[in-house]
Image (cartoon, rainbow, N blue to C red; front, side, top):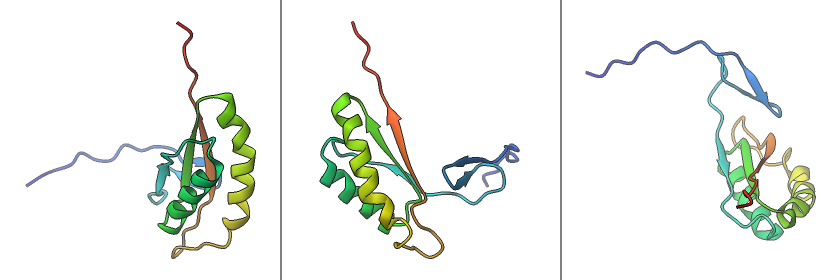
Length: 104
């Protein structure tokens, strides 16, 4: 029989409107695998994740071309976030991850 140690008490943080940690429920999150500069593919993947029940979606912003696409992606996704419901869940946070390339 497996035994698990007691859960560590943590405080609740908010990722956008989504509570994470503390006593909050588990939030479904994912990251896109598309090239961020490809706006239509990235938006399509975000909408698929949203329909599947994802509450937090992250995208990578590895370069200036991707950074310039972010506002278009956000504008295309944000109006739909209130319309797609999955039980009690809908996409409530659109996050970004920035990766800088080291100059070597």
